[in-house]
Amino acid sequence: QKIGDNTVCIRYLFYCINSNQKYFKLQGAGHPIKYIKKSVENFTFLIPNFNEQEAIGDFFQTLDQQITQTEEKLTELKALKQTLLNRLFV
Image (cartoon, rainbow, N blue to C red; front, side):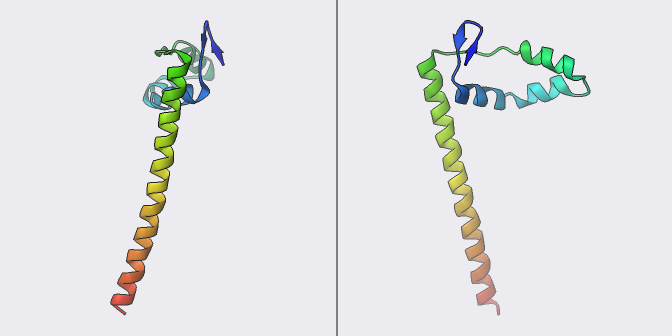
């Protein structure tokens, strides 16, 4: 995607916006859509070269996948714990 004169990696843009949710929530609180659009248009952030954007986006995507896998494993372990406790104290 082109933003101004720069090419931006979608994954990089996603993580950049996602990491600034507080800004967007504060800008949008109680304001009409027209005002929110202006605050989004005025939002500024650093845009490294495209290869760096891809690397950053890939890194955070991999990290998100690892977090998801860890959360799934934690859920499995909690279920196992509950099963073992039930068997132990029956």
